[in-house]
Amino acid sequence: MLTLQRRQLVGHDILLARHGNHISAMRVDRSAGRVIALLDDGSVDSAPNLISPDLRLPDTVQSVLRDDWKFLAAVSGTVAAVSGAMIAAAFGLAGMSSDPVLAQLMTTYAAY
Image (cartoon, rainbow, N blue to C red):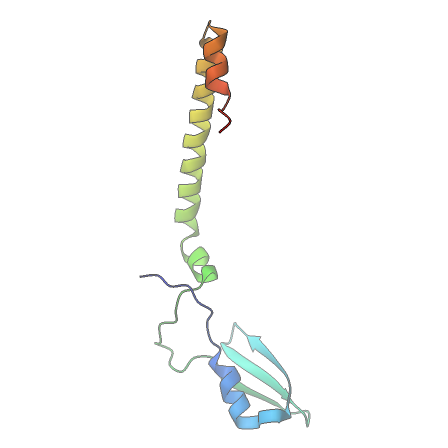
């Protein structure tokens, strides 16, 4: 079952445990998979974001879109094509009708 949730950055917790209130700023280096902290005394410390490299993280909206973009694009294109064909067929049938009442019936919606 797919559950989408925000990924927790373990590096933040590690750095807070090491340095506590002596951290001035933190940033995430996604390419290296680390969190980097600038300390009050001007030094820099970093910690890994993963407890284990083999750990399977929960899926997020961004990870699903990044992994499945081709499938989602194909489904969206198919739905758009079928919807366009149905709309074109409805207008075509309405235009072929010689009875104006039937054309009006096919192109207007009842107000409920």
